[in-house]
Image (cartoon, rainbow, N blue to C red; front, side, top):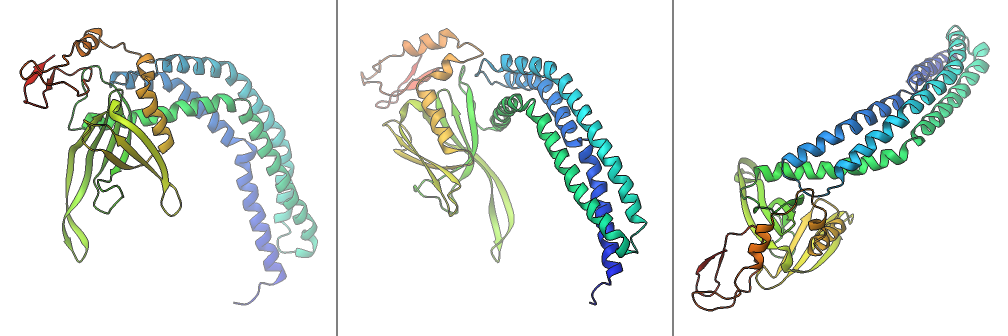
Length: 354
């Protein structure tokens, strides 16, 4: 391909500058800042409804969520007018500079076929584009800085609600039911690795943490037919694989694995009475956050932070559970969970009603 002539090269440069000026129009109006303000308005108003919906679906923890949502809405209503005023003021100042730039750009377009006369003006337009763009970026940062602290707090609660809502949706589809007064705390996509190391056909599903149990349910589509290593038929498999009282977790070890060390894994050491002595899981959330959550459950922190009080009759029922089997006299060593109606003697199989 032949090199462009000086006139053609200059015309291309003028067209490029014209395109940049067109793009700059949105920045000068501080459109991204305006959109962010609209998002903030919508999100702060919607928080209360999201929390109410989560409560209706069974989320009973973090009793201060409603108060936080109300505080965020109040703070934003106080901040919003000054933020909007700042946007309009900054945009008006930027608009003056932009109109000057547009005038120069119009002159430059008229010179697109005359590189000798237009070069100096083109250089001036290019420098002015950079200057206006820099001022627009600084203005947007200044506007965002007026409420970035509140933005961060709202983002934190929204991220928490995203996880809670996902868990609640998964629980609604689960093949098992939570016990009376048992509450779901967190759920995550996970792979259970029965051999202690992740393998190709290990069951994939959802790991749940409640205020009483750790539960893994397989939930995936598995291949039932392959042709030349290509899956041609699948079936959905969804079944409870295991559950264990959190009280039986003796130790939790976290690790980052994979070539990029970006895979989160949990190793659980379980006490007698759990379905397995060791449990290895690959999870799709921060493993250290899960360690903290499990520790908080074991310390009964979530019991103190319930929005819905526990039925004391269920608490008393657990306290009154027998320590010996009335049929064979064997010791009852299993963990009795709040909400259980019966326990089964591990020696004689007698079912004891609570």
